[in-house]
Amino acid sequence: MMETPLLGWLSPLVISVVLVISFFAFYGFLVKTRRNSNRQDSTTSKIHHDRTVTSTVGSLNVNGGDTVSDVIVVGAGVAGSALAYTLGKDKRRVHVIERDLSEPDRIVGELLQPGGYLKLLELGIEDCVEEIDAQRVYGYALFKNGKRIRLAYPLEKFHTDVSGRSFHNGRFIQRMREKAASLPNVQLEQGTVVSLLEENGTIKGVRYKNKAGEESTAFAALTIVCDGCFSNLRRSLCNPQVDVPSCFVGLVLENCNLPYANHGHVVLADPSPILMYPISSTEVRCLVDVPGQKVPSIANGEMANYLKTVVAPQMPHEVYDSFIAAVNKGNIKSMPNRSMPASPYPTPGALLMGDAFNMRHPLTGGGMTVALSDIVVLRNLLRPLRDLSDGSSLCKYLESFYTLRKPVASTINTLANALYKVFCSSKDEARNEMREACFDYLSLGGMCTSGPVSLLSGLNPRPLTLVCHFFAVAVYGVIRLLIPFPSPKRMWLGVKLISGASGIIFPIIKAEGVRQMFFPATVPAYYRAPPVRGETKCS
Image 1 (cartoon, rainbow, N blue to C red):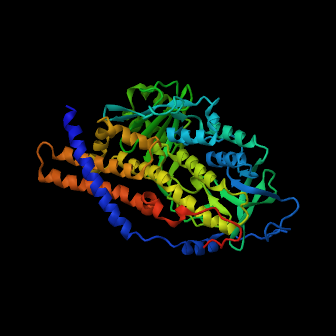
Image 2: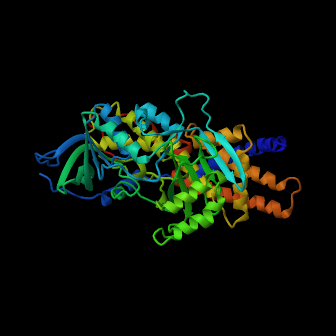
Image 3: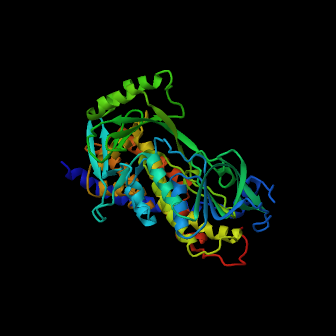
């Protein structure tokens, strides 16, 4: 029974590779690159101007009580804390300013893919997932209309300690903050950054209010903004195009036995997916996706009714009772799911990182992997530099950061945003055929399973692999429609399926940047050498 689909898969994959490569050769030829000068002009007009200071850093004046560091990090979430420790370990003086140093209580940022864990190892902070009751994750289970499949991470070539990890987000962040603050050259302070300090187009530091509400200023050669998805500073440093396709409604299921232990669970429900994974030895996080920017009211009971009548009947029977108990308990939270492609303005003296810089739908749990991968790239770029004070030369050099991060970050971003659209039900028959084809394709085994799962896990984030598998799913769906007897209606549905697949993935790739994503070596910034004193200014 399995031979026919397996044989049918080989041909579509070859065809899809040829079609995709041909498309990108033509598409890449048509894509126009942005001019850095335009970005720089936009930057100058958008930076917060704040010069009410008095003695000197460069040409900017400094009061005796003001602090001066090598790097200021705004925000101490996952990205900010990991970055502070990484730069501090490299002997940089780091000043971290975080709005609230108490333990966060979030419903996302709780699943770290194996690729992200490898980055923790590379940064030397893997012990931050210890002593927080973190759970190992070895793969996913998919559920659809009573059918279920198990998808294991391809971990055979890695050390036995390598796997995904799931945990309470707040516990993980507190461990990261403790790790960063353990270094004598890292200062962790609670305060709210009000604005960036700028002089002649170069960021010199920040103005902030400390825990007591007193206004202060801090200065550094480089200011890195990591203040999260609700960043109030990113408009100065990028062109934010934020999309909110849906919201997550979060619950904690207590003493729940998942169908597959130590696995993430995705239910392809109507109208959109449901995600479950363990966050401690006794708790399971359940995230119900609700399309659109509005959710039923939690306060007046509309949400509880929606969860019981629409969502609960679609849950695996093993978790049904725990799900109903969690709804009845009433600790229901919601948050918007945001996506935003990276579109930075290269700005002397400043850089964006984390969710303030780049977001994708959280369905695949790729956010922390992207952030930690970005930190590795930035650390490697900064290591050869002893002096960061020449903001203009450093800015020009760090343009390579935006190119070097692209293949990994854009692959994870594209997968997350495209997979969410495929996993949602639709009134369009072709879209539903794509959804069914995706489930069945992943059931085939071999490369049809290990290839997509290696992308999902962050172990093999290669753009061309992603595109090949995406269109292999689409062509596999067409083959299913045409066997055993093609009809005009089914042939037309197949055309719509391919067209719909293209309409999903190509706009996402275009927003990410075709050239940087697939051909980074053709971008001049890819080859930037570390700056030396007296270099020309960033243009």
